[in-house]
Image 1: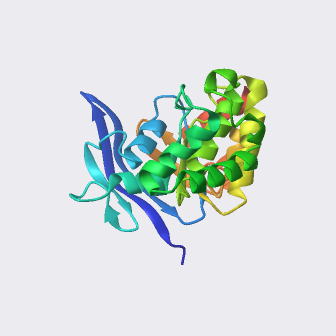
Image 2 (image 1 turned 90 degrees about the vertical axis):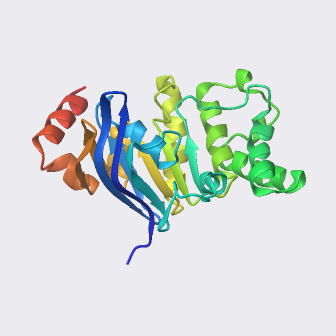
Image 3 (image 1 turned 135 degrees about the vertical axis):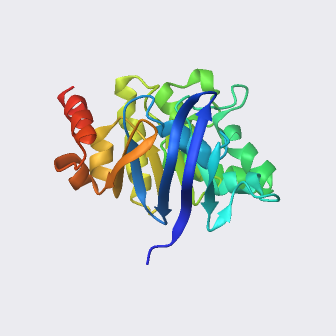
Length: 246
């Protein structure tokens, strides 16, 4: 039986009177690559942000290996090292080099020495094709390069799970391919990945499971072949017809 890493139970999130997530149940197994698709405003990014407490759920719970991440005494800093996040806007430290961006978290959170952290950072910067830019500051890098540094930074923390929040949506079209290539390579390593994305090719070709969200609920969740060729729900069919037509 597949080991459950993350479990979302009866999760709801409201901003004032606006309910963004409604009673969402969701399980992530070790080694799964899950793509979350849906229209803007369907709750996809909010679900991801609730899963690492960047947003506090209004009700419900998130379990990591069975432990409630909102329980008193739960070590959130360690949890965020295990469950890393890659943002659409990169979130790099502007005053640090690519290398230092990948080193600082390791030293502060994991207690690694600078030498150890640099060696690990270099290995991951090389893995994402950024070893030639280790001394560059973010302003000297293209969007695609910044996102690859952000992915290396997350990987340097040795996460069990990586959450990707629309990692290509802020990129120029010609930069999208280089980031998706890195993500496809990661998926093939067995890393557990949750990807909120508008890239239907990635969702179809790389995912083990595709989740379609609409109106703050999970409408459909199945293997890509079923979601893309035989969607069961009319709303899924309507969304895919519009997206794939474009």
